[in-house]
Image (cartoon, rainbow, N blue to C red):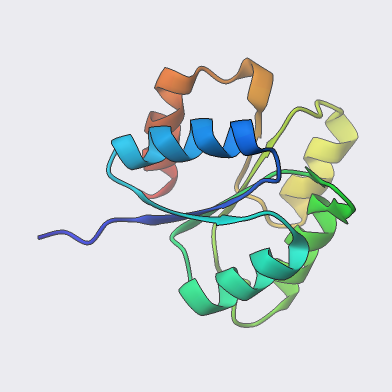
Length: 124
């Protein structure tokens, strides 16, 4: 039996967490959830997820800072990170990709039905 791929969803909005986590689980993924920087960094180090979905606005925390910390840490620098945000500023998208994110998805442009297909494509 094939091991389920694990996705770490870093998101603080309960509705978004429910929507994405349910969709991912229904498509055969194991889902972990973190709602702030401390939880995110601890889970990434301990669980080594196959993919991280990172929101940029997390209450007091900044997703770009979390991305930078993940990419600086030898234990997490090779983890795949996809930004999942409503911010569409070209400079922000460019910065996230330069910092090591493999893609930048804009939530309100994303069709939930095609969402898991995109996730599967990142995991090969």
